[in-house]
Image (cartoon, rainbow, N blue to C red; front, side, top):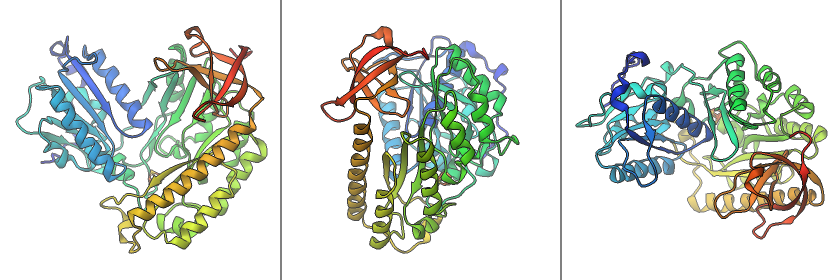
Length: 457
Ligand code: SF4
């Protein structure tokens, strides 16, 4: 059952929060940084209403699951997570939201133990759907059609260590042939520069030093407010207290030369880029309905490296999309091999119902997908290792992070090299000067020696 009730809303000030006092909640998030950031905001709203986060092992009164639907495997993981939580917290009121909930509300509502399913537009009003926490006989789904997903719900969350994740934009208007995000998250929209700067200032007042700027298609920022992503970058650069920004992922056609040039001399934007390529073959890019070709992509990499030779560049690649023949993959591999980039994030194509890609006849076998993915992962390792090795012996500024129990203290350089050091907790979230040594045992970081505090501290 799916009730389309876009008008359904209970005003926050009308909610009787006395029933929430002493209640507990658990949160489970799947998927991207955006989802984690949104869960954290939902958690803050529930906390303000008197609902505290359940301790480890404690039975919760409310379970909130924020789902992802990027692949079929993601859908399956969501269902498994819901079953697990229903079992671990018998009698708890179960709310499921996120992309899977938006795309398949009826399917999710049918899962045993689920009370309420909320689509993308309803997510931010989760509190008003808790009612009196009485379990429903059957799950009820509330979601709006994609065209009505219009609200931008701001969120800024502290990651599990020192970083904050600041959502600046949501949704996407691109409709790439393999992607369901525009259906799950709606059209592109954003907060205003002023609102986002206020959130960054709030993060700084809570001790934040580093912010990762997140969104679905962040280069598209400003469409709904008559501003641009470049305006936002310049305004954020002026926020006192924030020492570092990282731009999480930006479409190559939206990464303008003026942004690249600004980053190269900005106070706080790090020489670190994450650019989705998806395929290194023009024919496949056309099938994917991407808005650039390999020449444009290569020109962006050249531009970055020309003015920031030590910039870290992460690149997303999808292998095995429909239409990717052996010949096309080989040409994509050669193109990627020739790019001066640091790391590849390799994804295997997954068929998504309702997407245009399903109309392409040529299907890649799972074995071939696996083989292609292994080859690109090996290439990625080679590139990352060479990038790290080039920096051995240099002295660089590192922002130290709280390690996991039993792990060594670590942090990242401006250009995202992971560094392990001997240090104590008093150095958490501090900028230090570190002399970079050789690789650690499993080659996941460089060992470093702290020389002193950074002048920037
Ligand atoms: S740009 Fe393409 S791949 Fe990225 S979210 Fe939009 S539709 Fe999906």
